[in-house]
Image: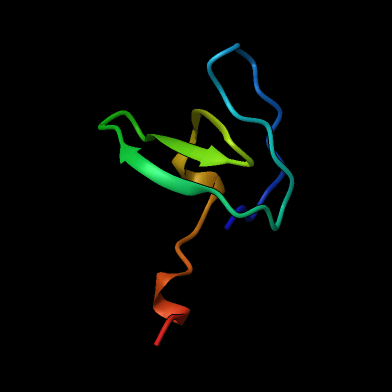
Length: 57
């Protein structure tokens, strides 16, 4: 889940608002993640999201 708003700088990035659900499909070594949100795939900074997996039981 996004913990901050993010506006993309490049065509291959995702824009999102705080609270958005993004499905991470890849974590890059440079700190950027690749994810899917609302059918759109793109890159975003990994420090703008936190995992909600620990909430699932």
